[in-house]
Picture 1 (cartoon, one colour):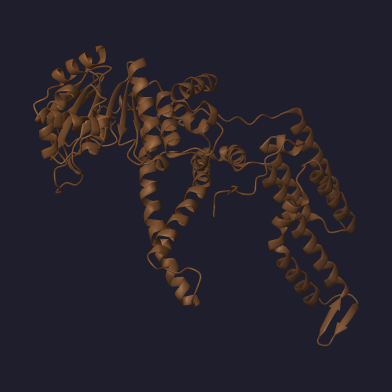
Picture 2 (cartoon, helix red, strand yellow):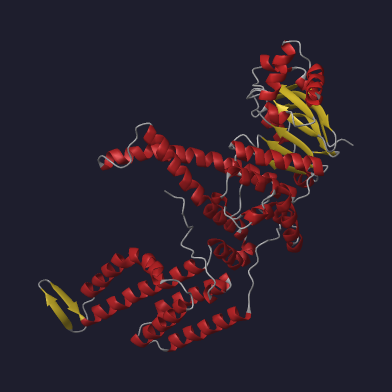
Length: 265
Length: 270
């Protein structure tokens, strides 16, 4: 059931976007998201759309992966569009359907919000499709490390995240094993009323939790035995290498965001 | 100086709880391989966890390479000198890939990156995991994971390696892989090994065997001496490996190993 699990949705590859430093990508996405929410003109969204298209083309990711990433929010996009279209009652009436009236400003507002959501998911999907979770964790750790001065344990947080990522497939394998074991004992996870099924899941969750606590204890022992000390200075095997092209990409993004800021109405 | 010295070690998990270790005294020479056997609850695993201060004895003393495990200053050094491999292959794999996991201990010890890369190459060859360095843990077999754990320990150049039932959760192939790695390590380096096991045939690979019961080491014998006490082992309900059981049956029929050996030589030359 879970043999071909891919963590997150990382799609290994050799494109320019794949080879960029994770910090550059993370910072760029951060700036672009800010720009998405600041933009309030059609020209602005045209420029953003163009930029997103260029970024997409440099990623080498087949479109169906993006579509898969965006599918779950499609309903949300429709919903927010209609909410805005129906409840912003300004400008001229464009269309009147019985009790519902669509005003011009409402429709424009709704379209903007929908575009924002779509662009947001589009860009973050591209980030997670071209960056492995571990690189992302490393990048976040470096961005958070200035907070060490305020006693924020950036390294421990990154370690927690990477352990969580590492154990996702293990937990899935275990879930599968427990499902089989409980099915052999007569549990049925797929039939019956909602209540029956919820009860069947108790038989799955209890052993899963018990085993997880046991595992956490063992893991803590193993980490301690190997000299892990949360406060101590450590060296790192993994390196993020910042190249000229990362600087170039970041400068481009900053220029783009500045231009978008000037295009605001 | 001995690699390990245990002096009248007592241990219990809770203040009022039952004694898990009651008066263990023993010592281990450098480069020796000790196997610890005994029934469940005899204190084998607990004993192994005292070796690098994961647990501290209630009373008694433990010296690792002459350093007391009660010394706060020496404990980090002891943690580096005593490498531990645990039972469950999945519960000790910390990092996302084999390479990162081997590096984990070195990162904690502050080994420079250049050294790390070089040491990873070396220990990966030693343990035969050089072809899977970029794999993720869920794509590895149990035996591979345990060899990665051994590699991670070796990368810190330990003088003592403690294996707490490291093969007990593996399939026969995995067991073979790991035992092969340990044996070649014992043959090619002077690492002191302490392996806790339920398998007599694994224990017989060691130089010396400790038999534990009720928190004490009852027998401290060489592997060879153990072979001469097979009846006693059977009384303790320890299943004998096939070869040992054959050896015992022959002995009961009055055929000693010596007479069997000379018989076989005679047959061969005929």
